[in-house]
Amino acid sequence: MTLQQLRYLCEVAKQGLNISAAAAALHTSQPGISKQIRILEDELGVTVFVRSGKRLVGITAEGKAVLAAAERMVHEADNLRSLGKELRTPDEGILTIATTHTQARYVLPPVVRKFSDRYPAVKLILHQGNPEQVADAVASGNADLAIATEAVAANPALLTLPCYQWNRCAVVPPGHPLLGQAPLTLQALSQYPLVTYDFSFTGRAKVNEAFAALGLNPNVVLTALDSDVIKTYVELGLGVGVLASMAYDPARDANLRAIDASHLFQPSVTRVALRRGHYLRAFHYHFIELFAPQLTQSVVQSALLGDAPDFVI
Image 1 (cartoon, rainbow, N blue to C red):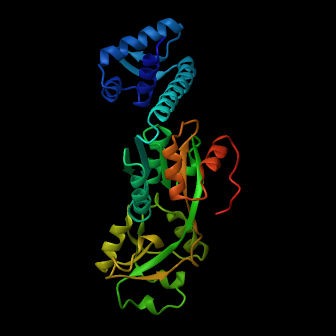
Image 2: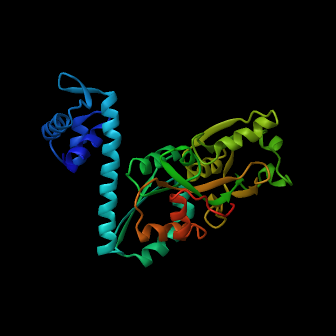
Image 3: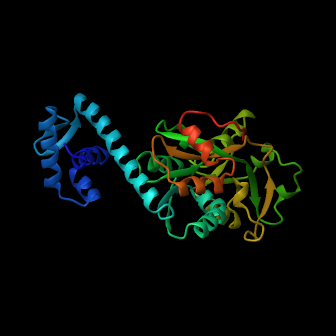
């Protein structure tokens, strides 16, 4: 039995039993993977995959147990490699972050600048997606950490830690009637077409819940995957935008005006998500602390061991 065979096994399962896709991901040949999996099955005396001709069509009950063990072994081997890199070159490596547009565009830039100044030899990669996608990226090992608001806390493979609370504002063109509302009400908002986030994004459920609690049915005419698209269509007069407050910048958004809406909706919490059991290098911890100063290395390490952080967001 070899680590390579176990890695082949895991990758085939990860790729939905598609051996060609697994071969492409691992930069090897399809026949080579098939042969090594057969050798492993013969050694174990267990059939891992159900076959129909040359195609894999399922995983046997015994195979699921083998895969679970193989995934743990491959994961620990990857952790060992990370430890070796940490000991050899503590300030070199790759940090891959999966996050949403709002975080990448409005929150992370100063953090990335400070991190890059401190670790010029660390290659920083940002993967942008919706919250489910960024959670899956960390759970599958394709990213080291995720930063998002929704979805990450629901993934059992991830440890999530709260970073900060935020709320929303309404954005309108200059001269809009809502600018005379003090304070803004949901009833007033419901009188206008709304432009806001897609349901999977950035606390959209909290917006819906607030309207529903008052029996209001807002007229959402456009949903978008990022704040800049929302603001673009508000500028065009399509409706009133409801977006994260940090996504409004008076200097950049000179053609818009913001109205505080934090009293209308429950706050949301942005979280950092880590894969349970994943080895974190020193620069991983440093990035997390730059983003959320309360999440020191000792706090994160304690959380990974099962201790809840002793602070409240």
